[in-house]
Image (cartoon, rainbow, N blue to C red; front, top):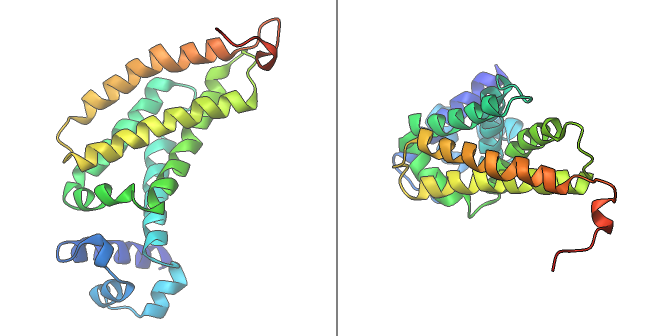
Length: 198
């Protein structure tokens, strides 16, 4: 019943978004829309952002769990599913994505995506000797790239095909991430002790 209530509240948000901008929506709007008490809402969520965080995590976990973390091609398919999910809910996504980077929600979206990029980076490191700090650096920048692209795509009206975006991600990965891991790998001398390039 708990999950059904959460989904009902999320559906109510979609309906209210048809009438009001996101920033003006209140908890009372949602509870009136689906006929539950404010107490029931606060039993499940602390606020509307908390509800959206739950929805994001639930959806992204579902999209990425089928992706093989040891295979970047599968991971990129996970990215493609994220973009297609937004496109399938375009009416609501166009109202939410433009304001997401002005809220803590973008930080949460980043945190969810980072878990997947970090897992993939850990696998791709293979036998390379790379510090934890460098692994974090690669995963962080990969995540910023993906989330930044998703938010910009939303702000621009989601006009570009997801396949074209993910194709560029694949090229960026092949040319950038694997090369970066090679450059960051320790050889005879730990990376932090090597002289910086002129």
